[in-house]
Length: 99
Image (tube, rainbow, N blue to C red):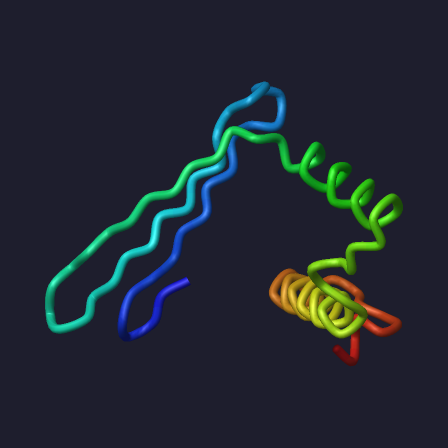
């Protein structure tokens, strides 16, 4: 994704590589200069999700993304699927067609 002031890039490793880091690189083009920041994590996403779920059940901690966030995620996924279908002249129906 690119915009006037910079761009973020998220690179996922191959799914069969255990503990390979996901890398987030943020590029900032403010004031005509480029600045890069790189963040990596080798913690498995599923393990983080499982720990957060456990915390919600055991300690009553609210989820980081509530119903509104979940709806936003679904809408974004539906729009991506609809765009892909349109670009490749594939049929698209249901909620995705009108997302």
